Image 1: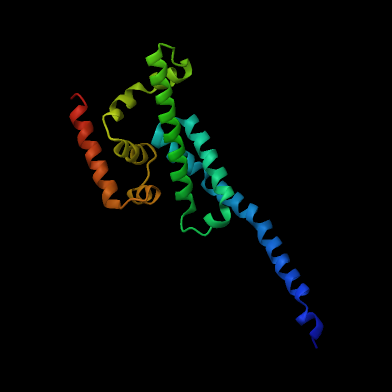
Image 2: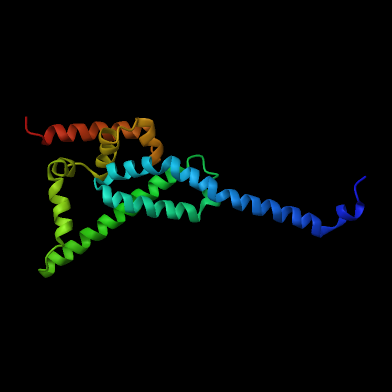
Length: 184
């Protein structure tokens, strides 16, 4: 027969909850590790396709997963936490590209040289970049995900939090724009 003293002892009840909490915390790193292992490559490829720079995509992806780890207790309950990480990584990379562009503009205006590594990176991808520069940022992002990353309409829609019809619309507009600007 159970001891009534144990049942009414608040400390024994608290210890049980504390042990559960310790067990839950211990499983968090493992679940995040599994999440990271399962999604890192796909997020990295999506970001690289979106911005066209593998090294910058790697940095942004790493930073996004660090943010995800800090918020994992909330994020793991999301329906698609990898979409959140992908969106954060893309936003981080865009912010950095904007910052680099502003810095280069300031350097150009003051007559200082632009850093050679930045210039080389832009010159290396000039053919595709010139074509894609004709597109709006949204069209460029969707076109890269679809053609370079070989993502489906549904994957793009889910990752960018768009309706599939909107993705199709932007792809059609991107194709039309590229047809108009490409010499025949």
